[in-house]
Length: 115
Length: 114
Image (cartoon, rainbow over all chains, first blue to last red; front, side):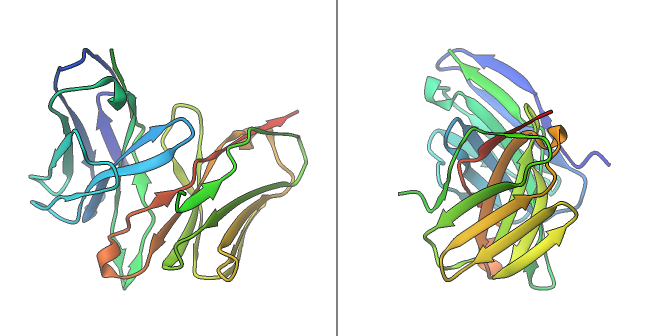
């Protein structure tokens, strides 16, 4: 089982450049999330999606856009990268079953440096 | 003030020690309580999952939730060097509109030395 796969694993961007991070899950989960992890801050929710074609803002959405055109894919875009977006980005997926929230499965992360 | 507070450590213990990790929270609507383990340069993996108050045991790991005090704990018995990792507490509210969104603590870095 591949689970949650993130592409790329590492990237260095110059300030002002754009890029797209790709997340793919093969578990048929309805919910998908993008988190960022910074030292001393834990993981913070950027955007999330509750189904194909839907997206919503999380705790720290500024400077990011997302799209969920297919159920298995969730894309995170940076239109004009800034040094403050240097972070490790994690994609996750989960679903709700029988009235219960289930665990979130995480990808391996994308290490992004903006210089 | 953050909704979830966790002492980042670092915490260093000898092999075989009992480890206690803790988080406090301020949002009384949290109903799901989780502990994730994250090895260096890897994604978080679920370790323990608890709904509402009480204790849950799985092998060497015990999770406790005290909703009256807004305090959760993870105990590791007979700690091993392979337990060296960052431990993240995470919480979410109940209900269909929560959509499983998690609020994390800062994470505690644990090193178990032989």
